[in-house]
Length: 139
Image 1 (cartoon, rainbow, N blue to C red):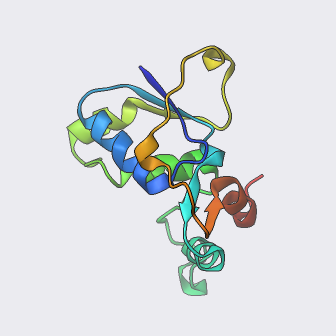
Image 2 (cartoon, helix red, strand yellow; image 1 turned 90 degrees about the vertical axis):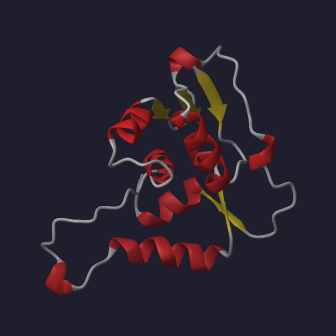
Image 3 (cartoon, rainbow, N blue to C red; image 1 turned 135 degrees about the vertical axis):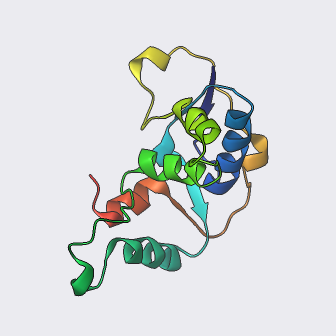
């Protein structure tokens, strides 16, 4: 079981790396999901994610699609988009993924790895998942 610390990692690069490892049969736990970052213009990112939540009034009683508002679920949904989740192998891969806000008690002493390929040293424009979820109304 691999424990990955998402602090300061770009969400898309982290997700693609995790999806590849899940398809190879590895069990992965991601901690500190709220500290992952999304690169790009803050205003455009907030507008994109907030528009996904609101529907036209005629569709207010629609059954979906539902979009997550908490950082752990946003990160898990991003990984889901990179795995064939409608096939049995993809569903099995997603069951091997756990995503947590912060570090749970049972993983306090575990050796955590970080992905240098998912770290961008000098990003000028980015937003953390914690800031995004605060704007989306999650507590």
